[in-house]
Length: 267
Figure 1 (cartoon, rainbow, N blue to C red):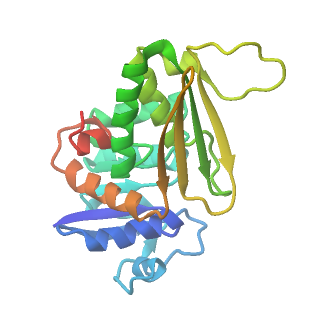
Figure 2 (figure 1 turned 60 degrees about the horizontal axis):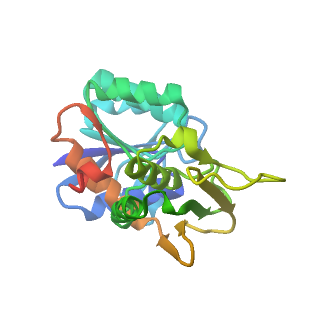
Protein backbone atom coordinates (compact mmCIF):
# COMPACT_ATOMS: atom_id res chain seq x y z
CA UNK A 1 0.00 0.00 0.00
CA UNK A 2 1.42 3.37 -1.06
CA UNK A 3 1.29 5.95 1.71
CA UNK A 4 0.39 9.45 0.51
CA UNK A 5 0.74 12.87 2.14
CA UNK A 6 -1.37 15.76 0.84
CA UNK A 7 0.00 19.27 1.40
CA UNK A 8 -2.52 22.09 1.47
CA UNK A 9 -5.17 19.58 2.46
CA UNK A 10 -7.73 22.14 3.68
CA UNK A 11 -7.95 24.06 0.41
CA UNK A 12 -10.35 23.28 -2.42
CA UNK A 13 -7.80 21.28 -4.36
CA UNK A 14 -6.44 19.66 -1.20
CA UNK A 15 -9.89 18.41 -0.24
CA UNK A 16 -10.38 17.02 -3.74
CA UNK A 17 -7.03 15.23 -3.45
CA UNK A 18 -7.94 13.68 -0.10
CA UNK A 19 -11.18 12.38 -1.59
CA UNK A 20 -9.38 11.09 -4.71
CA UNK A 21 -6.84 9.15 -2.65
CA UNK A 22 -9.67 7.25 -0.99
CA UNK A 23 -11.07 6.09 -4.32
CA UNK A 24 -7.86 4.74 -5.87
CA UNK A 25 -6.84 1.17 -5.16
CA UNK A 26 -3.37 0.61 -3.73
CA UNK A 27 -2.96 4.01 -2.09
CA UNK A 28 -3.99 5.43 1.27
CA UNK A 29 -3.87 8.81 2.97
CA UNK A 30 -1.14 8.68 5.62
CA UNK A 31 -0.71 12.41 6.32
CA UNK A 32 -2.18 15.81 5.54
CA UNK A 33 -0.66 19.24 6.15
CA UNK A 34 -1.52 22.92 6.11
CA UNK A 35 0.38 26.13 6.82
CA UNK A 36 1.15 26.73 10.53
CA UNK A 37 -1.49 29.46 11.00
CA UNK A 38 -4.33 27.51 9.37
CA UNK A 39 -7.56 27.20 11.34
CA UNK A 40 -7.82 23.63 9.98
CA UNK A 41 -4.91 22.31 12.06
CA UNK A 42 -5.95 19.30 14.12
CA UNK A 43 -9.07 18.67 12.05
CA UNK A 44 -9.71 15.31 10.43
CA UNK A 45 -8.74 15.49 6.73
CA UNK A 46 -11.57 13.19 5.70
CA UNK A 47 -14.21 15.25 7.47
CA UNK A 48 -12.87 18.44 5.82
CA UNK A 49 -13.11 16.69 2.45
CA UNK A 50 -16.70 15.66 3.15
CA UNK A 51 -16.02 11.92 3.02
CA UNK A 52 -16.17 11.09 6.71
CA UNK A 53 -13.58 10.61 9.42
CA UNK A 54 -10.28 9.03 8.30
CA UNK A 55 -8.25 9.41 11.47
CA UNK A 56 -5.68 11.56 9.66
CA UNK A 57 -5.34 14.93 11.36
CA UNK A 58 -4.09 18.10 9.64
CA UNK A 59 -0.48 18.73 10.65
CA UNK A 60 1.38 22.09 10.49
CA UNK A 61 4.59 20.59 9.14
CA UNK A 62 5.52 18.03 6.51
CA UNK A 63 8.74 17.41 8.45
CA UNK A 64 6.67 15.93 11.30
CA UNK A 65 5.17 13.23 9.05
CA UNK A 66 7.71 12.74 6.23
CA UNK A 67 8.98 9.47 7.72
CA UNK A 68 5.49 7.95 7.48
CA UNK A 69 4.86 8.47 3.75
CA UNK A 70 6.09 7.17 0.39
CA UNK A 71 5.02 10.11 -1.76
CA UNK A 72 3.91 13.72 -1.27
CA UNK A 73 1.27 15.50 -3.36
CA UNK A 74 1.70 19.27 -3.17
CA UNK A 75 -0.70 21.88 -4.59
CA UNK A 76 0.23 24.79 -2.33
CA UNK A 77 2.43 27.86 -2.97
CA UNK A 78 5.78 28.14 -4.76
CA UNK A 79 7.77 28.85 -1.57
CA UNK A 80 6.13 26.03 0.38
CA UNK A 81 6.45 23.59 -2.51
CA UNK A 82 10.17 24.25 -2.94
CA UNK A 83 10.70 23.69 0.79
CA UNK A 84 8.69 20.46 0.63
CA UNK A 85 10.64 19.25 -2.43
CA UNK A 86 13.90 19.85 -0.58
CA UNK A 87 12.57 17.94 2.43
CA UNK A 88 11.59 15.05 0.15
CA UNK A 89 15.07 15.19 -1.40
CA UNK A 90 16.65 14.85 2.04
CA UNK A 91 14.41 11.94 3.02
CA UNK A 92 14.23 9.99 -0.25
CA UNK A 93 10.50 10.54 -0.75
CA UNK A 94 8.85 11.02 -4.17
CA UNK A 95 6.86 14.19 -4.77
CA UNK A 96 4.06 15.17 -7.17
CA UNK A 97 3.72 18.92 -7.71
CA UNK A 98 0.71 20.79 -9.06
CA UNK A 99 1.72 24.24 -7.82
CA UNK A 100 2.25 26.91 -10.50
CA UNK A 101 3.90 30.31 -10.62
CA UNK A 102 7.48 29.19 -9.98
CA UNK A 103 10.42 31.56 -10.55
CA UNK A 104 13.57 30.49 -12.40
CA UNK A 105 15.29 30.04 -9.02
CA UNK A 106 12.41 27.84 -7.84
CA UNK A 107 12.74 25.69 -10.96
CA UNK A 108 16.45 25.24 -10.32
CA UNK A 109 15.68 24.06 -6.78
CA UNK A 110 13.14 21.56 -8.11
CA UNK A 111 15.64 20.30 -10.67
CA UNK A 112 18.17 19.78 -7.88
CA UNK A 113 15.64 17.77 -5.85
CA UNK A 114 14.87 15.64 -8.92
CA UNK A 115 18.47 14.49 -9.01
CA UNK A 116 17.80 12.59 -5.77
CA UNK A 117 14.13 11.59 -5.90
CA UNK A 118 11.33 11.05 -8.46
CA UNK A 119 9.66 14.44 -8.98
CA UNK A 120 6.55 14.85 -11.14
CA UNK A 121 5.72 18.47 -11.92
CA UNK A 122 2.85 19.51 -14.16
CA UNK A 123 0.68 22.57 -14.59
CA UNK A 124 -2.27 20.23 -15.10
CA UNK A 125 -2.91 16.58 -14.18
CA UNK A 126 -6.09 16.19 -16.24
CA UNK A 127 -5.91 13.37 -18.76
CA UNK A 128 -7.97 15.51 -21.14
CA UNK A 129 -5.55 18.44 -20.94
CA UNK A 130 -2.59 16.19 -21.65
CA UNK A 131 -4.35 14.74 -24.70
CA UNK A 132 -5.04 18.34 -25.74
CA UNK A 133 -1.29 19.08 -25.58
CA UNK A 134 -0.67 16.32 -28.13
CA UNK A 135 -3.37 17.77 -30.40
CA UNK A 136 -1.80 21.22 -30.13
CA UNK A 137 1.62 19.89 -31.12
CA UNK A 138 0.06 18.17 -34.13
CA UNK A 139 -1.78 21.34 -35.18
CA UNK A 140 1.30 23.52 -34.75
CA UNK A 141 3.51 21.18 -36.77
CA UNK A 142 0.92 20.99 -39.54
CA UNK A 143 0.29 24.73 -39.81
CA UNK A 144 3.92 25.72 -39.29
CA UNK A 145 4.49 29.46 -39.74
CA UNK A 146 1.30 30.03 -41.74
CA UNK A 147 -0.94 31.01 -38.79
CA UNK A 148 -1.09 33.38 -35.82
CA UNK A 149 -1.46 31.68 -32.44
CA UNK A 150 -3.08 32.93 -29.23
CA UNK A 151 -3.94 31.20 -25.95
CA UNK A 152 -7.03 32.35 -24.04
CA UNK A 153 -7.57 31.08 -20.49
CA UNK A 154 -10.19 31.69 -17.80
CA UNK A 155 -10.15 30.74 -14.11
CA UNK A 156 -11.95 31.58 -10.88
CA UNK A 157 -11.47 34.97 -9.26
CA UNK A 158 -9.24 33.58 -6.48
CA UNK A 159 -6.44 32.33 -8.76
CA UNK A 160 -3.35 34.41 -8.02
CA UNK A 161 -1.00 33.67 -10.95
CA UNK A 162 -1.43 34.53 -14.61
CA UNK A 163 -1.25 33.12 -17.18
CA UNK A 164 -2.23 29.77 -15.71
CA UNK A 165 0.25 26.92 -15.61
CA UNK A 166 -1.92 25.06 -18.09
CA UNK A 167 -1.90 27.99 -20.52
CA UNK A 168 1.88 28.10 -20.34
CA UNK A 169 2.04 24.33 -20.93
CA UNK A 170 -0.08 24.80 -24.05
CA UNK A 171 2.10 27.65 -25.26
CA UNK A 172 5.20 25.57 -24.62
CA UNK A 173 3.76 22.61 -26.55
CA UNK A 174 3.13 24.89 -29.53
CA UNK A 175 6.55 26.57 -29.27
CA UNK A 176 8.42 23.26 -29.12
CA UNK A 177 6.50 21.90 -32.10
CA UNK A 178 7.51 25.01 -34.07
CA UNK A 179 11.11 25.00 -32.87
CA UNK A 180 10.64 28.30 -31.04
CA UNK A 181 11.65 29.59 -27.60
CA UNK A 182 8.53 30.54 -25.65
CA UNK A 183 10.47 32.97 -23.46
CA UNK A 184 11.42 34.93 -26.55
CA UNK A 185 8.14 34.69 -28.46
CA UNK A 186 5.45 34.96 -25.75
CA UNK A 187 3.39 38.17 -25.67
CA UNK A 188 1.43 38.66 -22.46
CA UNK A 189 -0.28 41.99 -23.08
CA UNK A 190 -1.33 44.19 -25.98
CA UNK A 191 -2.21 47.82 -25.44
CA UNK A 192 -2.05 50.99 -27.48
CA UNK A 193 -0.51 51.22 -30.93
CA UNK A 194 1.26 47.86 -31.17
CA UNK A 195 1.83 47.78 -34.92
CA UNK A 196 1.35 44.68 -37.10
CA UNK A 197 1.58 41.37 -35.35
CA UNK A 198 4.81 39.39 -35.48
CA UNK A 199 3.86 35.95 -36.80
CA UNK A 200 6.40 34.29 -34.49
CA UNK A 201 4.65 35.65 -31.40
CA UNK A 202 2.47 33.41 -29.21
CA UNK A 203 -0.10 35.53 -27.42
CA UNK A 204 -1.65 34.93 -24.00
CA UNK A 205 -4.92 36.42 -22.79
CA UNK A 206 -6.18 35.96 -19.22
CA UNK A 207 -9.69 36.11 -17.75
CA UNK A 208 -10.48 35.87 -14.02
CA UNK A 209 -13.94 35.67 -12.58
CA UNK A 210 -16.58 33.77 -10.65
CA UNK A 211 -16.02 30.08 -9.93
CA UNK A 212 -14.56 29.04 -13.31
CA UNK A 213 -12.56 25.85 -12.75
CA UNK A 214 -10.54 26.06 -15.96
CA UNK A 215 -11.24 27.00 -19.58
CA UNK A 216 -8.45 27.05 -22.18
CA UNK A 217 -8.65 27.70 -25.91
CA UNK A 218 -5.75 27.88 -28.35
CA UNK A 219 -6.53 29.76 -31.57
CA UNK A 220 -4.75 29.10 -34.85
CA UNK A 221 -5.69 32.09 -37.03
CA UNK A 222 -5.17 31.51 -40.75
CA UNK A 223 -6.23 33.34 -43.88
CA UNK A 224 -9.88 32.46 -44.47
CA UNK A 225 -10.14 29.94 -41.63
CA UNK A 226 -9.57 29.51 -37.91
CA UNK A 227 -8.99 26.39 -35.82
CA UNK A 228 -9.74 26.36 -32.09
CA UNK A 229 -8.54 23.63 -29.73
CA UNK A 230 -10.39 23.91 -26.41
CA UNK A 231 -10.46 22.14 -23.06
CA UNK A 232 -13.04 22.93 -20.38
CA UNK A 233 -12.86 21.59 -16.82
CA UNK A 234 -16.13 21.58 -14.89
CA UNK A 235 -14.80 20.30 -11.54
CA UNK A 236 -11.48 19.61 -9.81
CA UNK A 237 -11.96 15.86 -9.47
CA UNK A 238 -10.25 15.12 -12.79
CA UNK A 239 -7.13 17.04 -11.69
CA UNK A 240 -7.11 15.27 -8.33
CA UNK A 241 -7.51 11.77 -9.77
CA UNK A 242 -4.73 12.46 -12.25
CA UNK A 243 -2.40 13.64 -9.48
CA UNK A 244 -3.09 10.54 -7.40
CA UNK A 245 -2.43 8.41 -10.47
CA UNK A 246 0.88 10.26 -10.89
CA UNK A 247 1.75 9.65 -7.23
CA UNK A 248 1.26 5.90 -7.54
CA UNK A 249 3.37 5.95 -10.73
CA UNK A 250 6.17 8.07 -9.24
CA UNK A 251 6.94 5.78 -6.31
CA UNK A 252 8.37 3.10 -8.60
CA UNK A 253 10.45 5.49 -10.74
CA UNK A 254 14.14 6.32 -10.65
CA UNK A 255 15.13 9.85 -9.53
CA UNK A 256 14.40 12.41 -12.21
CA UNK A 257 12.02 15.14 -13.25
CA UNK A 258 8.84 13.93 -14.94
CA UNK A 259 5.51 15.35 -16.05
CA UNK A 260 2.03 14.00 -16.70
CA UNK A 261 2.95 13.15 -20.28
CA UNK A 262 5.46 10.67 -18.83
CA UNK A 263 2.85 9.25 -16.47
CA UNK A 264 0.41 8.67 -19.34
CA UNK A 265 3.04 7.32 -21.72
CA UNK A 266 2.38 10.08 -24.26
CA UNK A 267 6.02 10.90 -24.93
